[in-house]
Amino acid sequence: MKTHLLINKNYFFFLTVSTLIFSSRINAQIQSESRLTGVAIEVFEPGINDFVQSDSINYSWAQGEGLGSADYTKFPFNFWEWYTSPPFSLVNTPVNDGLTMENVIKSSGTTFYNWNTSSAQYENTIKNTITLDANGNISEILTFKKINNVWVKYAKQNFTYVNNKRTQEVIQISPDGINWENQSKKNFVYYSNNELKTYTFFEGLLNNQWKEKQKLEFSYDNGNISETKIYDWDSNINNWPTNAEYKTLYYFNNNNECDSLLQLRWSSNESTYAESMKEVYSYNSNSQITKKVEYNNGNYNPSTSRPANNPFYQRSYTYNFSYLTEVLAKTYNDQSSTFENYSKYSFIYDGELLVKNEARKWDTTQNAWVPQNHSSFGRQMKYYYEPISSAGLSDIEHNISVNLYPNPSHDKITIEIEDDFIKNIEITNQNGQVVYKNNNDLHNKQVTLPVHQLNQGLYYVKISSNSNQSVKSLIIE
Image 1 (cartoon, one colour):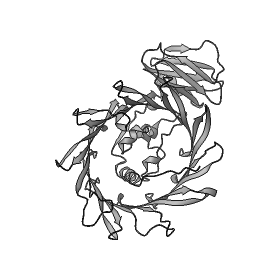
Image 2: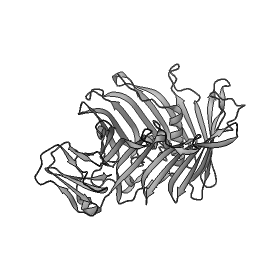
Image 3: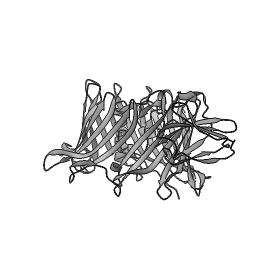
Image 4: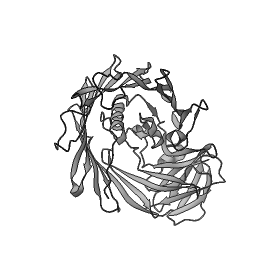
């Protein structure tokens, strides 16, 4: 059965808009000597009134990766994404293409784990391997899914470039692990000055055919985006409609900051564009967003006689120097004519490293911020890093594919190797002291080790195969 990607029109619109305007506004810099190795996701369990393990993501890196631009981590503007995915790296994204959802961490591979409550351990379910071209651009992302304890090819993304700019992305699905079917294609066209001109989304059909689905057009004024248009393919005329369904106008102040945008929707009743939504922004002296207020007219098919001037939603942003520490969201109460608490996102750092983020929902009965079970406001994420040049780790090659899980751990860990056999395992603490080393050479593709005897903290696991070595960071909780 063919599966197609579904894009929420409004979500896609806001994602594109926010990225084009604010791509440099909200970010955190990972220290150059560190790189992200794992993200642990915890969910709130009301039965015990505490957070429990849910999912985790581990990253493996090729030698030399995780340095330079790969260490500048761009966080999504739509903050709920923090609770469905890790940070996105700005690496491999053409300038001004404005599509944050296309960004991926430029690692040699990622592995996703789900927490099994019955066995009280993580189980790896999905993994990605990433291939780079000669220019360092991602050329392919191959996704495997574990079915009946066997890794099966599940999805593939191919990227092509012209002048180091992405021109096409093809996502394909492989139901049986062998035969690939077209799922979606994305074409990018640029102006001569490299600004994105059009972005077209196609859905896959049988016999390797493509069908137009949606198109975005971008206009600029002195380097700033001035207008975007969104078109949906009209199957009745078998062409793009004359009038875009959405049109957005952007206004910039003297500091080159977008202080407002106005979204217009085509009104079929009046055969013209009418205001649908607008957003107004405030900034601090560092050009960081401090407040966003959203207005609308509450009408799906707006009229020119009803401007979008009803307050609806507000977000306030707090920073510690250049680091975002809190996002406070409020909704407008028409009866009291005031904004009332709705949700709060908090971000905790260790120096320059983001180590934890969490979300809370305002509870009117308790008059407090509380986690909600079974929602994005009942999750928190912890981030783990490794120092690239610590204890001689930079001299060790990372050219074997190794999985280590669960990570973090408090009981035992499992180490898997794919294309070779594990020969030796050595675990050292942050001071370089060896806390574990096998006595005899191994010849296994999978090894499980007890780690309950280790103190809480960061450790490094060096895995040697017959010809290569790899190092993984390990967190003991």
